[in-house]
Amino acid sequence: MTGTKFFVLTLPVLAFLGWGAWHVVETENLTRSPRAEQLLEEIRHGLRPELAKLLFVVERYRDSNFKVIYDGTEYHVNSAVAQVRSYLQRNYHSERAEVWIKKYLFLSPTHGEVIVLKSPEGRKRPLRDALLDDLRKLPV
Image 1: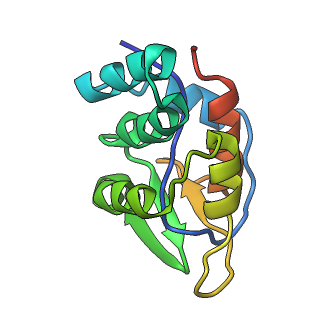
Image 2: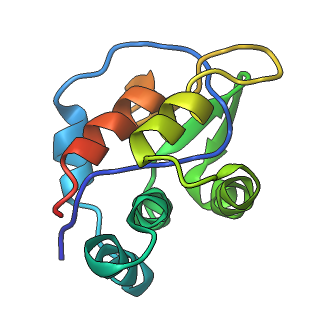
């Protein structure tokens, strides 16, 4: 099963290098976990659809080979899932998903560096930009 393209990570942001159509091609092949399917239903019919959108992003990339670069350190998506969920619990206050991504997923608070999403092929793009693109393509 293929699903929407989307990624959320709570680590603030790092370095910007080129980004193009690779994101669409690579993320269309991500599979949806059962939890991601539940989150899609919450987005469509739930009481907190904006929070469900953010959580969907985490589940969407859980088993992918994407990485996140935060303050110069590269992290595999799987290792960041628990931190993302924890960060959302502490910092989500009913904002629209787009607003939350812009507020928390661009620059790291520690070094002020851009948070970067890295494809399995090594191409890089600011995480914020990738997530905003994915959010616009969400199938709801």
